[in-house]
Figure: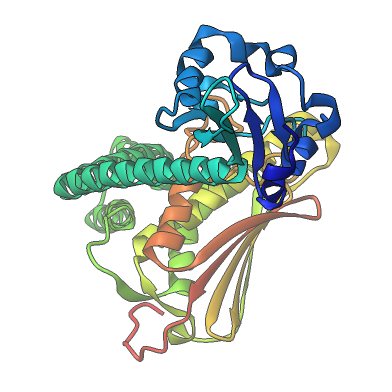
Length: 428
């Protein structure tokens, strides 16, 4: 039998071939010829098992044999039965096939009543789309699960958020309180040294007056007028010492609320208390204040905290100068100098504190305001002074503080917002 009766099957968009009951190929359409690269003339009239031996295996024969007796259609899929007619695409991958085998009436003179018509459909693209769909579906389901998990965690977090925030705030406040206490302890040492220096002169004067009383008694010169004079001088020295204690106590008194204050007066007050001690180290202090009364230098904040910042920077300048003096030696002719300058720029008050202590190493100048960072040894520095200064100026008073090297030393700049308040100033 020739292939003419099946010629119409050349036009269907799938692979089609027909087998006789003895597995002889009767028809091989152009589509499957193209897929396999096997020409029709090469395979028609030959046994299919010669090309594809799996046809003669029981797993395939048990499904194909009933077709030749007019049995119901059977299906072969690539996923379950591999490819019944393996076909390689241009990308080197096998086509995914779906094959339906149907009984086809044979001529009356045939040995068996039916032929087997194989319709091989290329479902590669469809399979790929199904796979992509399943992948997207699985990804979507996974994302839904992740979102549900995240929502559950978020709900749990929200339930505990208030406690977490409260705990973090408490921890931060405790940490800042600890830093403040350490800073106060360091400042206390400076205060005691300054008090000792301030008291040294009046104590010496009291000692001289007491010795003078003794000498006057021994030489018979102890008169009422003399006692009155000694009494008045002694009271004057004692009052001076008492005022010194009051001044220092007010200097370190914590500010409860923000208030208007004169930056110029705050700087002067700091220098009145501590400049004598610094000059004792043979360091000169120069002040360059712009013209203006107290109101011209008015700011809103915590005056005592600002004074502690100014003192901290001045003490750092002093330490830098003393370190340079130790390196160069007293015979070098080096003379320490600290310059404090006040400027007014638009709506800002600028405080500049510079020294000639050699400056700050450029490698670390960006770290000097970090907590616990210090270039001094443990006995001289805690590493919290400049950190606390930054907190006070920038967090508590809304200003800005920074440092740079200038000439043969360092310069610290503090910028505070100028207040236009007409509050009456005391001690301007």
